[in-house]
Image 1 (cartoon, rainbow, N blue to C red):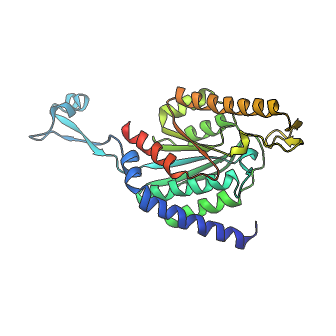
Image 2 (image 1 turned 90 degrees about the horizontal axis):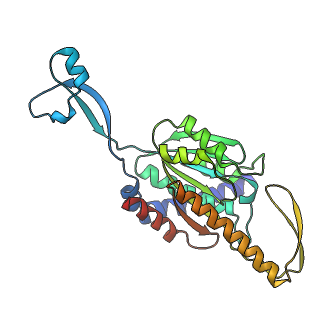
Image 3 (image 1 turned 180 degrees about the horizontal axis):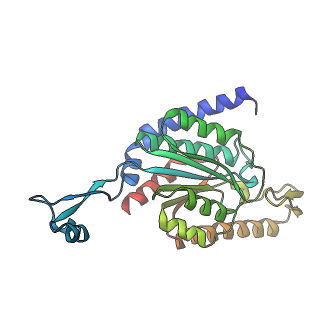
Length: 289
C-alpha cells in the first residue's frame, strides 16, 4: 500500500468512526464504560458532618484525634486495545480483509473513548509484542493508531494470547477498560484469567464467512497463514465441506466458551456485515453489569 492509498484509507476510516462514535455510540459508550467507583485521595482531620465510616483508625490512633479518608470519583478511564495482527487476520473473501475491519472497529472504539475524555493505548501482537502505543488523548494520537493498524505487517504469523496478556499486565498498572480484537484462532491459558481479574475485559471476534463455509471449487491447495502448512482439499466433496464447517464452528464455540469462563464479555462479527448492532449489544451488556 503506497502513502497516498494509506492516507485515503485513514481518512475514510476517520470519517466513518467519528460518525459512529458521535451519533451512534456516544451515549452507550459513556453509560457502559463510565468511571467506576472511588479512588483514595488523601487523609485529613475529621470535621463535623463527615461520614464516620471513612475514619482512618490507624492515623487517628497515631495523632490522638480523628482523621478521615477522602475519596474522589474515578472519571477518566484508560482504554487499551489489544489487537491481533497475526497472519490469519490478513485474509478476506469479499471486499476487505479482516485486518481492515479490525482497524475500523478499533478506530470507532478509540473515537468513542476520546469523546468521553479517556486515554487510549494500543498493543499490537502476534506470537510476540509487535508494537506498543502508550495511552494518550487527542485526535492526532487516534490517527496515528489508525495509520499503524493499516500499514502494519507482522514479523511473525502465529497468535499467542498469553504473550499479549502478560505484557498488558506488566505495563498497564491501573485497572483499565480493555478490548481484545481478534479472529480467535489461538489458545488461552491462565494469563487470560489474571488479566480479566485486573481489568474490565471484552473481546470482539472478527471472522470471514468463508472461514466457516467452503465453496465448491474443486481440488484446492490451502495454506495456513499462521503455520505455513499446506493441505489439499477436495471441495467438490459435500461431506468434506460439512466436516470443515463443523470443525471451524467448534473452534469458534470453544473460543467463546473460554472467554465466558474467564468472565469476558464477547461478541462475534463477520466481515461484510453491519457490525453496529453487535457492538451496541456488547455495550448494553456492559451497562447491565
